[in-house]
Image (cartoon, rainbow, N blue to C red):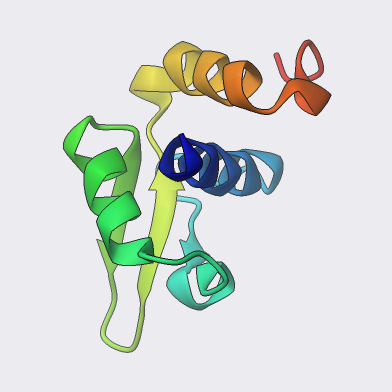
Length: 86
């Protein structure tokens, strides 16, 4: 459950900053999460996160193809935002 909550927090951070598809955020802004590489790998495998590899950094964004699933996942795990992100 703790990993799912961390995934939801990563997704929420990207969502609040409007990081969808080609709008992305550098990986250095997510260093507070333990096992960040593993969490991103899982989110990338299910298609919710897009990994952008640039010459000097890696960055992440959300996939608009899974927008509803992403929002539902966040709202299920972080009750404070339930009903506020649609």
